Image 1 (cartoon, protein in one colour):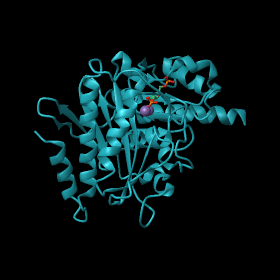
Image 2 (cartoon, helix red, strand yellow):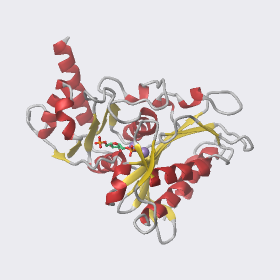
Image 3 (tube, protein in one colour):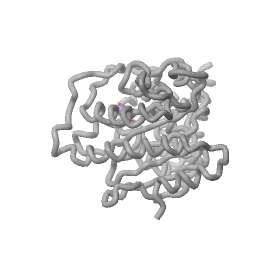
Image 4 (tube, helix red, strand yellow):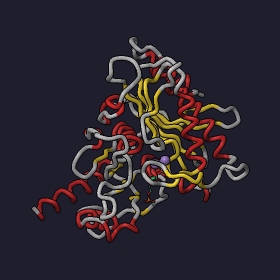
Length: 334
Ligand code: AHG
Ligand code: MN
Ligand code: MN
């Protein structure tokens, strides 16, 4: 049995220059994940389900568990001396390290509770995190530390609170997955090297937006239905409405997830910094890929904190098919 601590330590030993700070940061996140998991497991029994009665900066209704998960992560990270600044989907501004605490060289961004509309119906939800090295030279972190292209991430991961709780992460040396053993309260290595199939079984997209998609997206999704077998074999549909859960299934079984732009949401729905960049890093490290239709997600330079981007992510050949289809239709129109 390999615990997550042991695994992180073994990885760190491969880098003689490592100070152990990143390892400790990953433990901090694993601890926060265990606290959030414990709370989710008891969600129907204690008064933590339902809306908190407020909206976040994106105008979305905040659930009580969104706020609990956000506070848990922030409190697990802000006093350790490993982080200089943080940012969360649930907070409009940067989250500073309080004045009386030391600052460190890392920057952490998170979607504390992803898929939160699934909580009240006992569906799978998740936490997504993304870690960068600071670019500012000293003192408290600044906006420039947070607004970095995804290719600069030093680590990214997610936790899925599903039928079991799993933590999946990468530091750029492949992707490893750990399953929480609730009897001992430890994440144990269950998926030492996650590699996603080149061609997937599933496609995942919210098809209720179909009429609002651009022609290219409609055309590509029809291909995924199996309407153009000479171009691509049809796939089975699976959509939970929780990026972590949809992504995780497709990572393991092979598949493609799309949240394209539509006439109501010209930049799609998902947030570059808290959702798309970390998932893109994991997808690439598992042999898959991620694009906004024309650009590699990891190459996008953000210009604001809560920026959204269309997302096409998953098995490499399937993402390639969608990107080629979008490109050729754009060329036809030009
Ligand atoms: P969050 O709960 O963090 O706001 O994220 C919800 C996201 C994502 O998890 C999911 O893929 C997507 O919203 C679903 O959106 P639709 O309900 O529009 O399909
Ligand atoms: Mn989310
Ligand atoms: Mn969220």
